[in-house]
Length: 168
Image 1: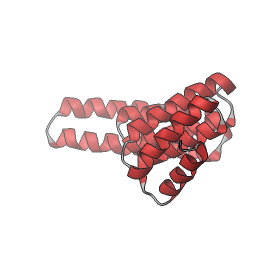
Image 2: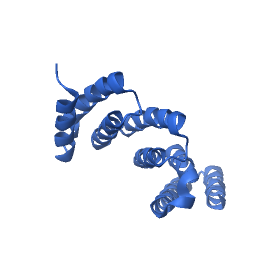
Image 3: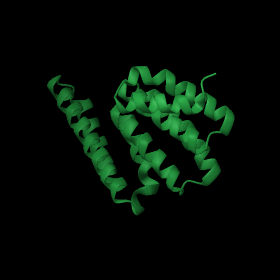
Image 4: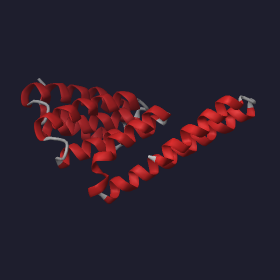
C-alpha cells in the first residue's frame, strides 16, 4: 500500500509545481487515509485538507475546496473552540475560497466567517476590507446592468442592498 508519507510528498510536489488537476486525487487519498488513521484535527490530516483545498482552488473547484475546509473548520471548532489560531487560519482559507466564488452570497459568508477574528489580526482586517470592496464592485456592476436594461426597480433594490452592506 502507498504510505501516507508518500502521498503527502507527492501531493506537496504536485501542488508546489501547480499541477492541481493531478494533485486532487492524490490529496483526496491522503486525506482519506490520514483521517482514518489520525482523526480530523491531527496535523497530518489538517495538512492534507490544506493541500486538497489548494489543489481544488487551483483547478477552479472553489465550492468543493470550501466544503473540504468547512469539515475541517467544524471539527476544529468542536475540538479547540472558535478562538484557536488553527481555527482562525482555516476560516481565513475558507474566506479565500468564498472570495474566489465571487457571488454576493459567498462574499457575505466570507465576511461573516472572518468577523470573529478581525479584532486581533491586521491581515484579517485587510482581507475583510478587500472582500467588502469586492462586494461593492459586484453590486455596482449589478446596478449598472439593471439600469442598462431599464430595470429601475431592480437597480433601486440593489442600491438599497449596497447601502445596507456599507452600514455593517
